[in-house]
Image 1 (tube, rainbow, N blue to C red):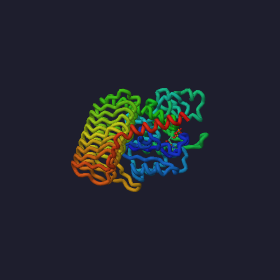
Image 2: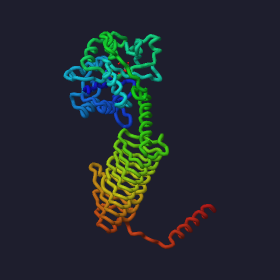
Image 3: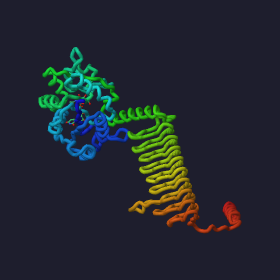
Image 4: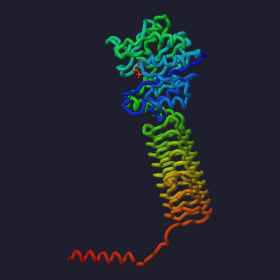
Length: 452
Ligand code: UD1
């Protein structure tokens, strides 16, 4: 198989997003547009990947360096157009022998199988393969102008298009595949003779045609290649992403009575046989095992939910919440960095942060793990089968032994031995008849006032 490399264009400012965050760092499904494109080209088998970055965002460069190494981030400054951007990668790929895929860095919905037709066209003899699409609104896109036998003669940008060309519905999606040597030779010959004064990559089509090289295009659905230039397009891409994930989980045997209300992350993992009730939100890093039920209005991120566990309604699982088999986390309970053992229960209004809850333990309503002293975080350990009375404050670091009880309302600052009872509150004072006397006195006072 011909070796594959990719050049991802991400140097543009993305001003139409009207955001302080660079365009390619905006997220779909909780993952940045650029990360998503890198994932896609990696899965498409590209063994060398360059990302063309601008000088306006260290964050974009950092992302590329972290994922692909420093050499993968190629600076384009100033930004003189898409053709100039790709040309900036010429030196880095000088020793590469194979096909180069060029792709925009802002296509969050692109999947490896969408790119395969381009490599196929190349294998079938096209010197340059282009991905086209027929968008609902063609206004902003370059038009693919074809010859009689379907090969592409040139791409005309909207700023240079006549009315006749504007009527063409086939548009350029901004993905191209050609042999490295051809691509960079064509790019070295394009000019910037256009109203924007930019070097357009689309000029390579005319250059290939000058050499009588075959240029072919494949047509992809708009939902596969759409970019995210504006907040509105970003939301539209998110909606399509969510729809795909919902359909996939339903096919996989996850029960969802109202899938249109459930929000997934790019890496959500849910086993067949789990149930997701309406209005559940998954942030990144969640795994749900079979038989678990995530009840309505729960929010989960960075958490694992074990087999048959019951979460919510209105539960919040944060990073490091590890909920064991058959455990229950009920309404208005927040769990962060706590391992909850098999069959343990925290059913109402609690904060469990940093620690361990043993198997079968019961955490009463209103229990707080007081884990933070303003500087450091400390752990709370609740032993197997322990019973933490309602409204107990467990001031970490603290351990409650297996089978121990704490009295409701206690502030527990010292470790509790296994099977002991710890109570930290005043002895109750009882005054027989006090309430009746009090009422009588109050009524008499009121009557006196009314008479006066
Ligand atoms: C480009 C195509 C157009 C196609 C459209 C599909 C050109 C000239 N036109 O349009 O035919 O229909 O994509 O979306 O290529 N970028 C750089 N450096 C630059 C300029 C751009 O890295 O100097 C990057 C941008 O960050 C972006 C990508 O190239 O990721 C495409 O740029 P954009 O301005 O969105 O594309 P258009 O020129 O509108």
